[in-house]
Length: 437
Image (cartoon, rainbow, N blue to C red; front, side, top):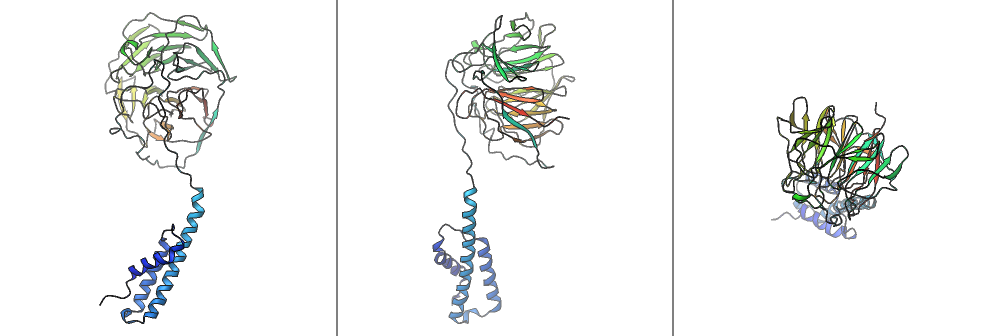
């Protein structure tokens, strides 16, 4: 004879019958536990339950159902109280390419997302003290700054010089200057010749800005530039030094200064990303290709910075994938090494980068060559601990792609680019960290 008191069946019937007034409320764990405990107690107290009076069974069943309903009602009310405070996560907005104008709209190397998962990789937890607010973002003055992207920036005597790039219609020839002391933008009148181009790089040596490489139009071999032109802020004049040695024409390259020499790294030659590594000496106007050990991974649309006498390379594209490794070059040993970092770096290209207090800050950029990052757009790498982190800040950084940045008096300025709506902007985000001891 079958057991007339099948608890599991009775429980499901009670749920169906008694919770009719709470159709969206799940059976709470507490209700299930109370019901299970009651059933256990019943079986222990009455081992001969099969022979019990049906009225007693119904009475106990009703008691269990009441407990179940109360538990479900509590869960339902809790959901109603909490639900209004839950904000849905924003979805990633896909944007159109930058305005067409006969200039390249993005780095043409296809991205292999199967080799380089971007957003799905979970962020590693870094142990230690709770994160503290490390600084504040504010909107610095931008009136007078013409929106542009794929340009380069350099700092001389507290002033930021914006050179090259495009406004989406024509290649920009104007040099615009932001005075960080007065908060004013001006477009200066220059003499000499500057070759208009995009996706170029620049470095400062002895107060002069050396502007190198880039593309004069769409990413075609004939448009790649091997130009090296010098801008002197003291005279507002352009000059073209006569050089010896060889510089490889390329775009979306990067450069940095070590021991008074300009190290020009990587780039794109319209077919592939490059591991090209060349050095320019402003004293002799000579290009050389140093003999190195180790291996520099081919990259384009990345950033290179100097920390404690070593050259660090971060982000970019690598022939169809997005590298996450940080690479470092030691000029003393002429050796490249890859850093085994702790924590999660959000892969990106066409971003901004700078150094404060011995740490590398990386800002903005894109995972597909068009859409600005919506998560982890602002990250910091500590070369001493080899650790990535997402700093906690006040204010808001406007995530953009094709941006450029510069450090002036221990502050970041992140300029221009294309925002998440696909618009060219003249945004000037300023980041001020706490006082550096």
